[in-house]
Structures are given as structure tokens and as C-alpha cells.
Length: 247
Length: 272
Image (tube, rainbow over all chains, first blue to last red):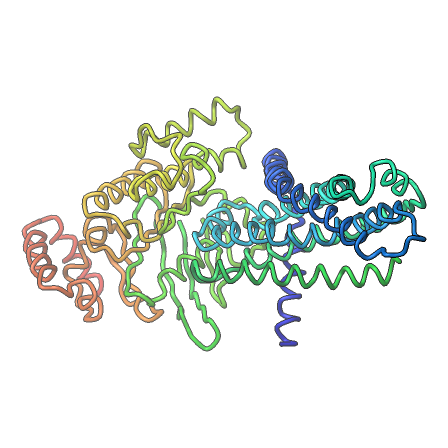
């Protein structure tokens, strides 16, 4: 097990090193980067919208359920929803879901290209496939996923506010008052640090597993599942490390 | 011309290629034949640089390909076209985009010029009205043609073809073989074909290398093959009664050919 960890880690580092070379044609790399931004960013918008709205709504309702003391003002619910969404739910939960959506897509796309010899075809043409196929995916994830996380935080808070109003827990005015009190900008920095780290994990780990698939269709499925599982574990691990280091 | 000098390759304990030496000549269809597991695919992958050899040299017009790093290999790789067994077309691109891809990546011409070149190549492989179709929407034979068009779009000096007839009906196989042979002569390309197909061997084999258990067992042309005395080669090529009969017919045809006989006798004299 230990040997395998170092084997994969070494190959992963070599893959990252191999990505950095002079592009054969900058225009084609830019085109591929933009294509990946659309695939990863715009393609994931729907799922981010849905999960963040519900995360915010559930957080509001459950926080209200736990705040039984009449001494605590209702606006505290908004503060808790805001900070929970920014610090944890928007970056971590959204990225775990994206790890499944984007991760399996990247792993299966590259795995299929490997099995059907499309990667070999590009290699023979003289293209650095690590640079052309993997780097744009990682860069696109680093650009679009933090934007999605910021969006998720806003949507989650808005979802929480609407859920509070709809279920008669807290009025819009009280919620807005809570949102404005004791806001710490450092939380946003912390959330963005998390989202950049997770974006790298979500894109590079599945790329590694997909790019190195050997075998047939069954192996593509296995690689995709392994990529998602490893990405999720690494996200949770990184979550703890970042919390310990930055908070 | 491609020269192979004492190529050796092993995967772990298993020796795949043992001191294989051969010359792949320009303007000729060079065939690598052999049973499954004989090492012909590994040999081809070594030649195009997808697998590194353990020892030996591969020379492209005198330049040692095996001693080059990835950066140095790039100019030679851009002179290589390859048709894969499964065609290896890019799923997300149309036929036209597939053929245009190498041009987009490596040529500086305008879109109009590129499109004209793509159309030239598609016309050359007799592929009509398929420009906007995706690989999933075309037949196996059409995929092979698109693969050939993509391989020749940059005017390669070397063309590698892996199992061109796998999964194709006999008629389409003949068309593909004929196309490869014509292109080889037309553009004076060094073509290397990896095949099991006996039609290809008999029709296109200007220069044939027979591989057996990682060794080059026999070398010659499609005319020499009918007179070959190598037992392993004969067991492989003329395995069925049908092919045995064809061999006898071909032998008698060639024997009646005075010029062929004179040439053959001259070769025998030189050897002795």
C-alpha cells in the first residue's frame, strides 16, 4: 500500500511536470481552455444552483430548530447561515459534489481518449498531450470553480433567507440585519483558499487516473470511480489541514 | 527511409523484441506480418516513439530517433502520419474538424487554405458528403478513410498503418489497401503496415517482414513469399488449403514470367 502511494504520487508529480512545455499553437490551447471553462464552469452551474439553494434553506431551518433560547436574537440565524455557507458549505460541499460531476467527466473523457488511442494519435502528431489535454482542464477549474463557490455562497444565503421567510422563522429585515453584523472579510479569503485548493484536486486527480487508464471500458469506469473517491477524500483531508493552518 | 538496428524490447521478464534489424524503404509498402503476440505492434509503437526501446537504434533518414528527447523528436513526429486500428478519430469533432486538427495545430495558413487542403484530402480518399458528420455517424470503412485523410493532411514522409483491414468486409479492405498503396507511390512515402490480412500481403507487400516470437524470421517481397522455404512462415501464411492452392497457382504464374525467373536466378547466383 505504502509502495503504491509513492508510485502514484511520483507519477502524479511527473504528470504535472510534463504539462509545462511551450505550446505547439497558443491559439489552439486558448480554444481548448475556453472550451473547458464552458464545460466545467457553465456545465456545472445548474447543479451548483440547486445544491446551494437547498443547503442555505436547510441550514436556516435547522439552525432555527436548535436555537431554543428566547434570549438569542433571530438575526443570529442569518449570521450562522452566512458564516456556515461561506466557510464550509459553499466551498467544501459544492466542491465535493463537483468532484463527482467534473471529476468523473474528466476521468472518463481522458480514459476514453486513451483506450481509443486518441491520445496516442496526438502524441504521434508531436503534441504534448499532457500540456494540451490536462493543463487547460486544471486552469479552467482554477478559474471557474472559485467563481462557482462565490456564487454558491450568495445563492445559499439567499436560499436561507427565502426559506426563513417561507417557513415563518425569520423576516427578511431580521435576516438582513443579521447578515450585516460582525462580518469578517477573512472568512471570504479562507473560502477562496479552500476553493482554489479543491479546484486543483478536482481537476488534477481525475486527469491523472483518466490519462493513465490501461485496458478497456471496465477500466474507464473503475478509473472514474477511483478518481472521484480519491478526490473526495483529499478534499476532506485538505479541508482539515486548511482549517488547522488558516483559522 | 527508416532503419531499424538491433531493436530489443522487454516488458519485465518477457522479451518482446530480440535484435530486430530491418530497412523500411521509401516509396514502398513495407509490411510487418506475424501471429498475435509476435511483437509486430510493439515494433511499430517503438518506431513511432510511443514505446521506448531497451537497446538498438531507429534511424529516420539517418537521424537517430531513439537518442532524441521529446523536444528533438517533434520535427520528425510532424513528418509521421498514422492510421490506427480503431481509426482513433476524435469523437467530439466532425470529419472535417478531425482532418483539419493537424493543420490547425501546426500550419500557419488561413482558414480558407486549410479548408481547401482538407477537402483535397477527403476527395483523395473518396469521401464525399461526410464533412459535417461525427465519427459515431459513419461506417468503419469511412472511419479508416478519415483516418488516412488525417494522416496525409500534413504531407508526411512516413505513414504507419496498424491493422488497416480489421473489422472491414473484404471489398472495403481491398479499397483501403489500394488507397494506401497509391498514396505511398504518389507521395513517395515510407509506408509501414502492420497486418494479418493475407490479401494485403499478396496485393501490397513490396517489402514484407515476418515476425515470429519477437524475432525477424523472414524478409522479402510478395513475389518471394510464394517461394519461401521457411517452415514457420509457410505455416503462418499458407495455413489453409485455400491459401495452399493459391500459393501453387501463384508459383506457376511467376514461373512463367521470364523476367521474374531471370531476376530470381540472378539472386540465387549472387547468394551462392
